[in-house]
Length: 135
Image 1 (cartoon, rainbow, N blue to C red):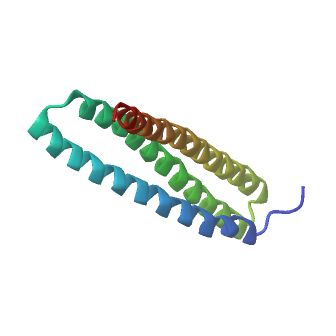
Image 2: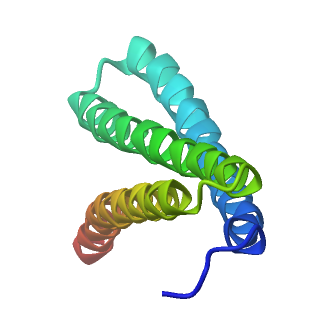
Image 3: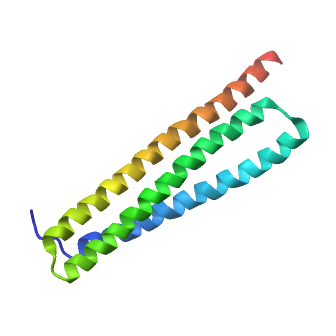
């Protein structure tokens, strides 16, 4: 394996920062939708809203874990840079490997969250299509 340099972990900084921005935007969007659904539920007491809130709660938890693993990956990239700086190259390689694994887990959770989001939207589309067929 080629020697790990300071530039290798720094390349992940911009990628992880953009990913974290996307995760935060998802989190804020879910929080807004949940607040709106909460208000609607208090007015109508519709059980379909409870199902939507339950789905959003699961997606919110996944997003939280995506953020935790993404931030941990960034943290280990910084630790890697410090270890390279103090000439602990062998440890730096292992820590950087851990950072990559954490990023992979974060992205894997993103895939799962996207699948859940897509299923929820497909249910809404099916409801609309069913309503249109009745007309």
